[in-house]
Length: 377
Ligand code: ARG
Image 1 (spheres, rainbow, N blue to C red):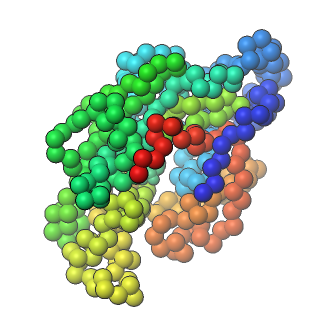
Image 2: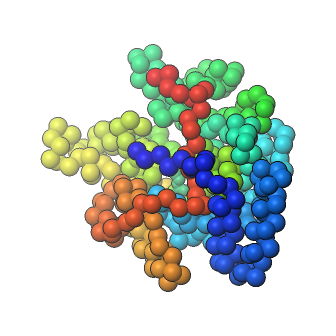
Image 3: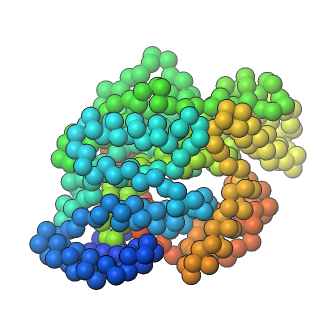
């Protein structure tokens, strides 16, 4: 997998100037470009960094979404709500900010895309930055079972163990869907662990439009994916904590989270429920199970009034995004292997596209793995 980490050596001022020029041109402030760049040059010379104005942060974050090669949902980049959390410097402040992000984004099911941007790192002290250890704000624990298997989400085994090492011990009985606590650290501080309030969390129990017994599988998923372990780079500044969300595309849950063999691995159980012949791969029992599982996800979110997009609609929206970007004279970058939905790939128009996977700035980058989370398994 390609890990697009930001080149630290790139000169901050040049990156800043390039960003200001593109940002101001897009938002119609061209006459302010040279004075702003001048100001930033002086600020960087005396402090080693610079402060972005709130409208720069707002448009920069939207550009970062627009530039996210792996995101199929980018048509809506202009609607991103940018929450300026740069002033927050207490644990209570972080907790409230994460909580209000979740409430704003969830919006009782009418999911709204948002990013909460915490203080940037100083280029000379990158390790002195606020860090959120969670991969997503809502995620289910992975518990190592006696038989060596996993109860819950295998992807979260390391993080779950890390939470336990910090004293987290939610219930004597572990379930497949225990919501993980939030873990973060302020600059120079210790890890802080605190669970989100239950009333902030919207979940959808999964049922099938025709097969009533489907509900007995006891599957569920949360409403809002808030990615919290990527860093936002705008104009050469690194924002190491910038949790962001959109709404779900059904296949993320139905094909990947629940379908992947190394995740919840639900295809065998679904096949059994629908009486499919899983002895021969040529019966296409996996394909048929994927369809039923994905139907259940779409049906349940729809019935509960939780915003979600199916992969056909999302593909059409992405094609429209490519067109609107072309009309603006911008070239769309994209990662084909991520953009093609993980079900019925060739039925998506994206499958038939050639895409350039160059990574441009501003963008969201993977942050290096925290040593606390490196594999124990
Ligand atoms: N694929 C991830 C998950 O299933 C979420 C990634 C972000 N997805 C989104 N629709 N914004 O949890």
